[in-house]
Every structure is written in C-alpha cells, then in structure tokens.
Image 1 (cartoon, rainbow, N blue to C red):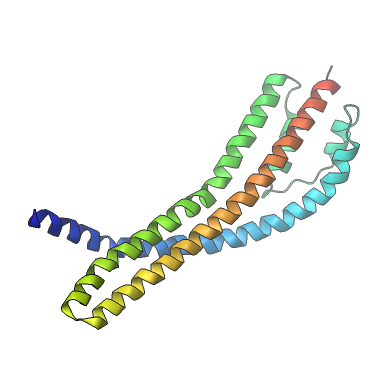
Image 2: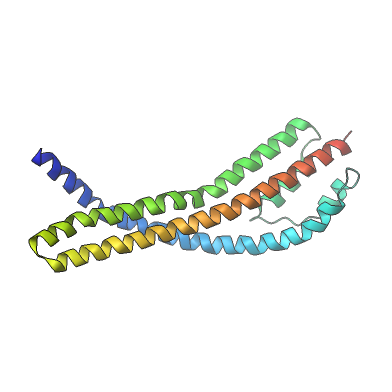
Length: 198
C-alpha cells in the first residue's frame, strides 16, 4: 500500500510543471480572446446599428434589394450568412442548410471561450492541490520556507485559473446572446425570402 501511495504522489507532483505550462498557455489565449472579442464587439455595434433600421423596413417585396446593400464583415458570421441566403437557390432545403451551417459556425466560434471557461478553473484547482502535498510535508518537518514556497504556487495557480475561467465564461455568455439574436434575424430573413419566391 505504501508503494502505491508513493507512486500516486510522484505522479501528482510530476503533473505540476505541465499544469503550470498549460495555465500560462491558456492565460495567453485568454488575452488574445479579449483582444479579438473587443474588435468583434466594436464591429457588432456598428453592424447592429445599421441593421436595426433595415430589419424594421423589411418585407417580402423588398427583402432582396434591402439586404444586398448590407456590408459584409469577415469577423461577423451573421453578415456572411445573410449574403449566403441571398445567393442560395430559392428552395427551403438550401435555406435550412444555410441556417444549419450558421449554427455550426457559431458553435465553432464559441468553442475557444467554452474551453477556457471549463479548463481554466480545472487547471487552477490542480495547480492548487498538487503543491499542497509538499507544503504539508514541509509543515510536518518544520521547513517553513518550503511550505511558504509551495503555498505561493498553489494560490497563484488558483488566481490564474479562475481569471482564465472568468474571461471564457463572460465572452461565452455575451456571444451566445449575440448568436441567438442572429439566428432569430436569419430565420426572419428566410421566411421573407420564401414568401418573395412564391
């Protein structure tokens, strides 16, 4: 039994360096996500401001002429799929395919934030618990310096892990609201396109 616990201890302490490296990588990814999200947020504000008046005036008679003038942005999936809907053949199958493709693209876009929201706290917790073993050993042997060093690592990894998770969670929630509104708008456009082609 003693040998098994030693093996588990070696495995857990051996995981500390990979966990810290992953935390640093995810922290860098979180910073990049904040930058790209801010850029997307600015474009989204401009696009929504333009589209609000357009959607208010849309009818099945003017849907194609009004939406052809919509500016396309590479960072906004909804603007790309509005153009795809206009170019697709006037059949329900093609409209459904475009809407399904849009939902897949949304899930793909959310994957990065979802990963950070879930794995950040997990890695933070691992980085907290792994140094606690050596810290308790240091406490038992009276080595306060070793205990303090391990506790410092434990608390630092917790904070970084929670920060990564918070960034991922906030971006995920905001983007989900955006995509829900976009799907609603695209379904509205599809209904008008169906009526216009009859």
